Length: 197
Image (cartoon, rainbow, N blue to C red; front, top):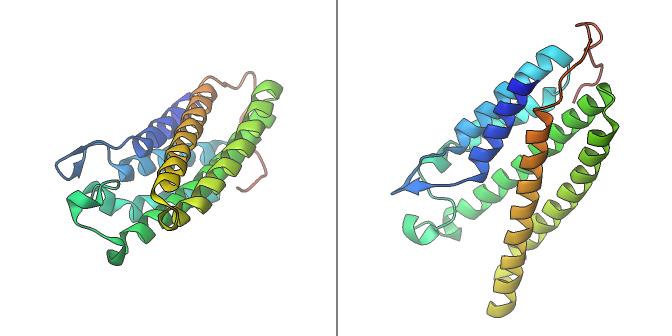
């Protein structure tokens, strides 16, 4: 469990951080999604959960390959504009990541329930609800920012960035917490969970 969630944590951390040297991402998103896939693959083989989350991780691995060579946040440098379809691509990638996080939360909730850890289950459940609601609001509002006045648009944009950062950090902290959950006295048969996520 620790090794699996270490990979998932590291994967989401790579996706969260973006550091470019010239045009090359030294913390590539595809590598992050591949690590997430490896972690989910191991959890799936041991506990029979996470099928859809693994599929989305692999889809995002493939879809995110262009982000290795094109900076995601500075279109002035890359010369890409809305007419190039880049914003649509980035929005699709963001929605895909949100779906992946949704399924990863389902895996975490099932594992927390399986181990009978009520405290971590309730914490995961609360974090899941707040994260999904907050990120859905952020994702829904972002496309309309360009239609607002400059001052209002900048203000709301900064607020959305802050909310997104907080939610991503809270999610990463929770993933790190799951690294410490270990089975105690469970045989391999008792570890099988009949939930397909």
